[in-house]
Length: 76
Image (tube, rainbow, N blue to C red):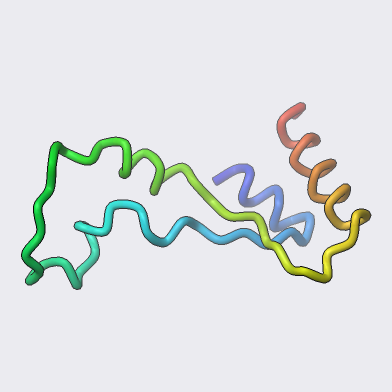
């Protein structure tokens, strides 16, 4: 959450991963599917993954800004 807050403060858009363990989605309650194992890794990925905003119009200066903002957070 800290990095998401940092990026938002620097006007960098993010989105949480919206898929992950699909068996936890409400639409799967009535579905017939086979689940192998506890899907622990999918829960880890779902809870710890986010997308950085992207758009074909981003220029190198924008990507550099994103890079520098992430680096600043990591060094902090």
